[in-house]
Image (cartoon, rainbow, N blue to C red):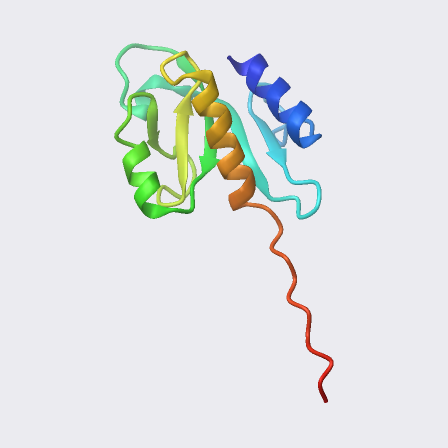
Length: 128
């Protein structure tokens, strides 16, 4: 699922993954070209840190969800958690292990992209 997520983001948003942690080539950040804000963080997370049973790690993606009610509804679904390693009120962690359908993940990526997009600047009126 990781490959399809990378491909989707690269194709739709024309941005490539960045690897901000030099020793780690598994945790990738995707940023807006204009404002450099993150809209997705793809990572390996310990199952234990997400409250999952078993040992080992799972691929996951962190995404921004500004709507509080939507955020709360999403985190009740299997495979979606309050964000690991980010603000739990505005971000979610989504498993990339097939628990959440690919199309839903793509929709959530789009939502995150919009939530972190540069805000249009307000033009000042020319009235003196």
